[in-house]
Amino acid sequence: MIWNENKECMSLDERRVLQGRRLHKIVDYVYHNVPFYRTKLQNMDITPDDIRTIDDIVKLPYTTKQDLRDNYPLGLQAAPQSEIIRVHASSGTTGNPTIVGYTRKDIGVWSECMARCLTAYGITREDIISVAYGYGLFTGGLGVHYGVENLGASVVPASTGGTEKHIRLLKDLGITGIACTPSYALHVAESLEKYGVRKEDLKLRVGAFGAEPWTDNMRHEIEERLGIKAYNLYGLSEIMGPCVSYECEEQNGSHINEDHYFPEIIDPETLKPLPYGSVGELVFTTLTKEGMPLLRYRTRDLSSLNNEPCACGRTLLKMGKILGRSDDMIIVRGINVFPSQVESVLLSMPECAPYYRIVVDRVGNVDKMIVEVEVRQEYFQTGFDTLTPITTLEKKIADALKSILSISVKVQVKAPGSLERCEGKTKFVIDNRKLV
Amino acid sequence: MTVHQLSVFLENKSGTLVKVLKLLKEEGVQLIASTIADTAEYGICRIICSEPDRAYSVLKDAGVAVSLCEVFAIELDDVPGRAADAIEIFSKENISIAYLYSFLLNGKGVLIFRTDNAEKAREVIMTSGLKYIAEKDLSKLL
Image (cartoon, rainbow over all chains, first blue to last red; front, side, top):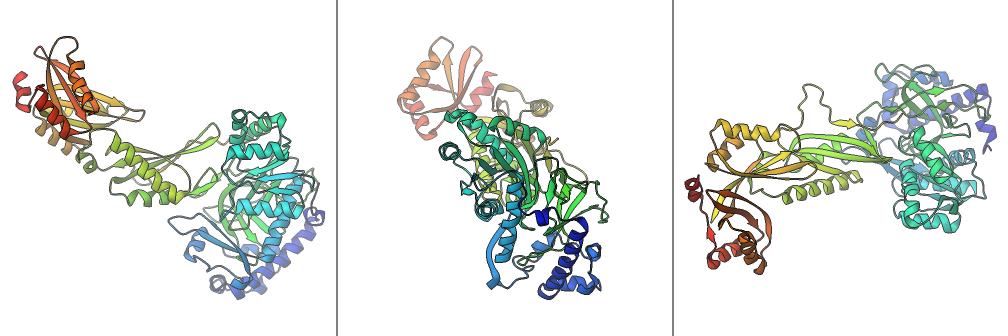
């Protein structure tokens, strides 16, 4: 089923006209409301009147995560505060999260796009959906929540944690759909037995999974163990939140709601746009956003775009799986982690030497993050002769990391001089996750 | 009553222990007893040796994670049950042993240990008549 056939199945020519008109409008809007963009455009000698069709998008400047940090907290907000009805934030490096304000219209567009995703997954008004993404500053919980309400299905705002209670709700309420991270879905699947529930006891039939990279193997495992169809849901808070793209029943790429979020693929080195089919950095321009519109925002996600017609009937472009990141950010259990955050915590502790390594692994489909850090020699000289001070120190570091990163981390103390020193570019992050 | 012990923090990786032992060998430091307590990722090597002060500065200068600490040393006759008798004395006083190891030196049993209450343990050793070993006695025994 298709939620908005008019928009999702629009002819390509018609859509390009719509996108061109919306692009002109959004450039005009930021030119007059965001000093950051006005200065940028003026420096490039571009006025809104130079942007007439969607092909003119290549004339526009890129926006980076650094621009968002530099303009923290509200520098890129275009709408007056009185028009903002919701604020979300995504984790950033060292204390500066990205703040995103939404107008009433933005929330409406979000709910519309989200309803398109849910409909593509086969969800209808008859369904009961458990939203087990985190509710709060993170866009996952409330984003999906509003989409389910817009669609008219019943929403159960389960949020994260409390797996036992969640499984009970799944069973007792006859919940038919679940939205969460793929690793949490597997955790639920693994926990069923523990709470004496068989998948046959559940009415679950569909799942919307996103916020972290996942593989076809994970999809098969989730589908098998929960007895459901598992669909990808992609989004990022800078652009909107979950709803930017979604899989249809074909399950071979995610349709982008490109009448609202215009996608491009660029070479992250040369910044030149790449043709369909090439792997590069995914870039989005928000065509209709009022709160914090962004021009050519570099997501740092590596993917590709596919314009071949889809059997589902939608004419929206499809994006491939996220293949990695073009910067040093790592995503662990759906949470953005920057090595610089870890470093700032370690450097603030007198016991730690400035040598560390982050190792990320996936054990039984759950991400594990280990921080290995060298401890200063002086620390050992003050009466150390049992393992207690070592485990105490590890716990102290782990607690400090958890309060900054919001995820549990295993800390391993290392002897002075034991971590490899690299000349030139130091490899702080070792990602052993195999996402093929 | 107490002797000096080197405690070295080691990672569970081949080559880490030998590095420490070689440093001592080059200085002509003689090991009297040693033991390793290990976990999955790392361990502590505890060493009683001749010239602990010099051994400590050698290891420290080489960047080794080492500390020099005092541990109790008592001497026992080399007959069955003596260790049990000795530890029972502490146990009756509610003193816990943090770690313990033993070795034979010139026909005498030596117990090396740390307790959770050094002050009280010292008192107990004094009053119970346990025969203790001082640093200088160790080198004499060598």
